[in-house]
Length: 428
Image (cartoon, rainbow, N blue to C red):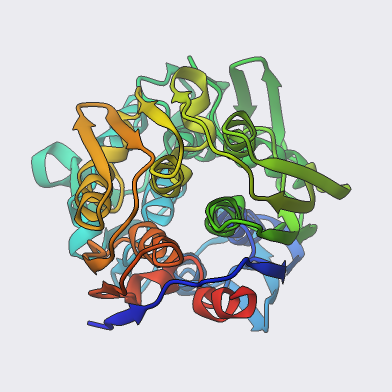
């Protein structure tokens, strides 16, 4: 347990930050580079615990991955040349690693067993396992493969036409990765647009993939080829400092080279509706991913409703958006976000408990929450629930509390943002 005590600031925030590389893109760069033929160079890789689980999994399957700072050199073996791991694969706390790797391992010529930590073991895997079984995969584990640990008996797969029952880029990606190894076409249909990093990056690696609206089709006709990948800053990490700038009066922060993929920028839409001024400069595009500098200035906050198609575009940012809403006039409504209940923890319960404990007025609902503002946060003890986003939300809350905030355990922050407190100190 790594407890931390934080004090409020009594002045505006100012400065520049370059947040770490995007977690979703970093995972995929390692996976696709390992499955490709030839060398892949990755720049601005996220050196967090979750992404390193993906690195270690592919190293265990014979892939040479060399890391210097935030750069990787991956000597890809090709999908069909991965080796049987000599040990069980440990995915730690990484849901992305677990769900996407099931799609990779399902079509291998070898058997494998995968497991995770106590938190990951509680997260549902049947949402991935069920479509993979329709493709011919053999996956065994607790409750018909609903939870880790799982044993995957690699065998030939057949393409399917699959409509996603949940708004999940992880499920979509797992099916597409299995489709790279399957006979015939694999089609994935969405009812709501989810983050599209898999489709974008597979195109950059030369896969046979096509997206038309909410329908994506992939085949095994083309081998992946190594390429260069630049990982933009993670907007989910930038979100904490976006909100910090929004809630501390007079603040102005610049967040450098942040990813601006349209499937991820829901937070920017919401905070502008809430009255925050946003400017984007130096926008660029590399490998199909856009990024730029985000300048955030504090303003008078008003309540909003966050629902529907917007939810998949900001699902990971909802905890810190809830904090923002405590400082807005009126009641902010968050709904259609039942996916929050199966994250690293039940984030609806965690956010409600933590912020109410600090003096907020929030009601949890089955699929979201009602946040009544504006409230003066008092400070006090905050449980992290072993969830990096809850711990960082609590740290940002401390900027405006009357008393100190004591977070019971900050160790989970290393999952996605190892330098978080260094960056926080830089702007205080």
